[in-house]
Image 1 (tube, rainbow, N blue to C red):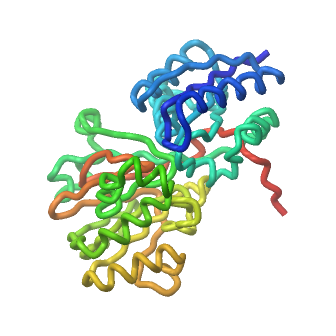
Image 2 (image 1 turned 45 degrees about the horizontal axis):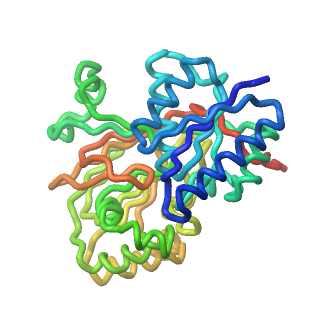
Length: 334
């Protein structure tokens, strides 16, 4: 019988009370134990502790790790898995990650096609189909990194002192990160992920552009005034809102979408185009695909990862191909 750890955040999200989430976790545990798993539930209440629990689970020999919570819990568990991978200097070939989406947004589950209802999510885990996906890695660089990006990024002694974090969905830079800071729990309770869209429209008329420079892994350079840079490993930012709409979780590339700043009126038009999914075909968005990109700005601007505030520019963001095995619906490839 295989061991499986459910790493749960009973306080994740705002859509249900803690008691309700505890019942869902217990029900999922009982469901999975009726198959070939011996299930252990490990509980925590913040992303840092969740990461530590994932590392402890791997150290104890558990190779099936399931995150029960929202996208913050998913991000925390994945950071634990990837940190263990780095420390052990090994791949996660024998480790499989799963999701029980009981948080507010559950955007990663949506991108993976994992049912939001716990029975459907358990059914995916029991079926045992595995999809291998990429993981993003963001590293905050020293303020002078924009002057000598290659020298700074490649120096191991410098990198060891820098703040890094993994992500599955996206890195939002500029206005997007500010919106996340301004979106209250109460608004999320009422509107769920569309709370971000509403707050975006309310605040976009107040936002100014910032001079941003992108240095791509293949040597390309782009500089312009911008109000939003979205770097996606997944297509969906929030359910049907797809800023990096051509992104795929397993193509070994990041999708980078930059919205140039002209004036506030144009920014409102661009925001509406994003909501309608027309910002690439009909808008003036700049769009690239790359294995990595360094983003610098004057002045520094905030960065969010998978929906949580993280750091400020300059940052280096790269993709780690084929890094994670995930319990997922079987894809019919014809």
